[in-house]
Length: 222
Image (cartoon, rainbow, N blue to C red; front, side, top):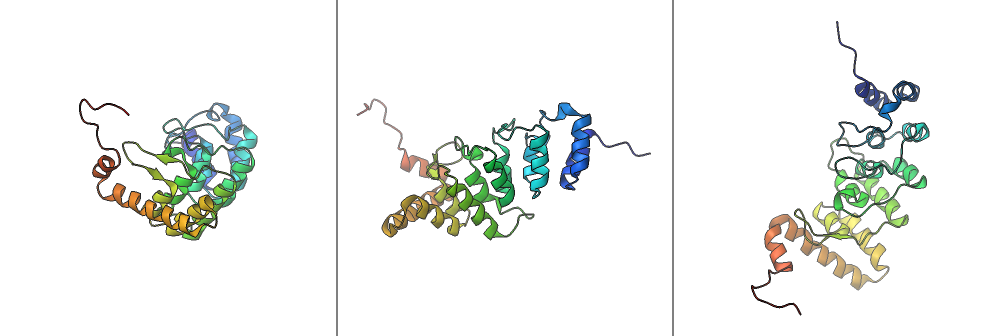
């Protein structure tokens, strides 16, 4: 005799099947799951639902009591990043319309970065969808100039990140958003993006030393 599925598995299945009545029943009978984290990359069930295209399911979870801006337990990202990574425009718009933050404090939390790299998934929608999601984020006022230097990247902003992932269309759209109609400035921004993208993709530590040469012992600050 097959063992009955555990509650988390039942919830995941109901969300994936877009079975709103079953989703509501499961959370009504298991209210402790509303504030819990799943095995899905440390997110909530709202994070998981945002990775699927159903706005109705996302709305049902919000109506049940899920917090739109509750951060994931691993990376601190909100559900919006999942929607953008999956290229789900309508879900992303719903979350933004209902108060989702666009957290750019870390690259892994940045929904624009998630949108740029998301199309590599074999289950992802057409490439054009991610261009539309990126435009949505820009129109809603995301800080498109946020730049990151960490163990995994050097001087990386969204233009360079898009260039590195082969999304020249998104790179140019972001450059135009930041520079307006100044073609010379757009060209410079894209050239810098290419430099940063190549530097990070080929030899990040060499590029880091070029950008931030180590101070010689005994040297004084200016």
